[in-house]
Length: 221
Image (cartoon, rainbow, N blue to C red; front, side, top):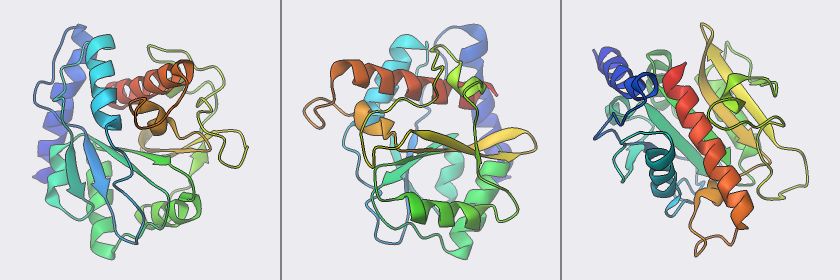
């Protein structure tokens, strides 16, 4: 029943892409709260700014506020798009992993943005969600980089971190991308207001455009 409800919400959200007019009023993006000690709450106004950008540039009509949901809560099924970030440890209990897996298999989407220091823990947590699936790097030709905005080199580099090239990785379920994980990019810092992070405006625009691509792809695929 919960999976059916999620699919219904996702179908409503999807209609904005097909009709090219504002749809999806009342639908909230959601920030995922997890255990382990990592700062899941690291964002300040990133999601509000991303929603405002999408509503202005994609024709969506998302709720300007976001929800906060626990990994093990049935509330996640009310939100077709989950966002997760932080700097430290990530732990999913068996029940939380099962809940998230059911959500993703049933039509949900999870975007994880490593805010720095999260990577080794995030990979273990992702493996717990999908022990039978491999986290694969997406080629630059993948349609997530070819939505309204064209990113021919994949994720934009917003923060230096370890000075490595950004990477975009995914988990697929029956040919559907259910989880997208970005490393060495930290695009969500670019979603924050300038008062929060002094990201140069050109990089901030790249961040918001890539975020819009992820949103658009998640609801269109």
